[in-house]
Amino acid sequence: MGDIPLGTKGEFKLLVTSEVAISFLGTEGARVLSTPHMIGFMERTCRDTVLPLLDPGYDTVGTEVHVRHLAAAPIGMTVTFTAEIIAVRARRVEFRVEAWDEQEKIGDGTHERAIINVAKFATRMAQKTG
Image 1 (spheres, one colour):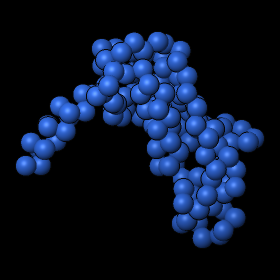
Image 2 (spheres, rainbow, N blue to C red):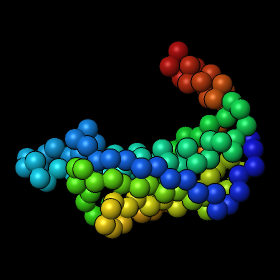
Image 3 (cartoon, rainbow, N blue to C red):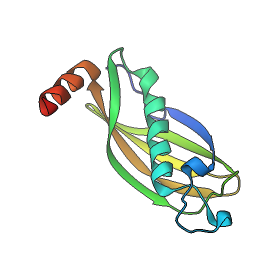
Image 4 (spheres, rainbow, N blue to C red):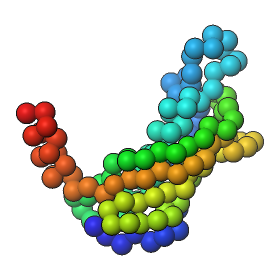
């Protein structure tokens, strides 16, 4: 499965656009990065952080998310997502995650991913749907 050192860090930057912003508040000036998108980009940052450390044919899937959405990031701001590996237990990898816009921290928490063999996973999913 590869060597996964504690403390490994990753980062992803996102420009907040209408595609990742909420739309239900009605007023254009109130459109901000949605919570589901924030969590999704936190997960993506974690996956992208650990993926280069895994053997070929392996990947990860999310298993736990514990996140707080602390502040709003308006359309036009850049959000920086960070992930740090804080624990590795068998095939489980735990990350500390944060999201910062250009002025403040907008989210933080932890996220766990399970390491999977992609071919075996696909076989199990085919059996489940077959």
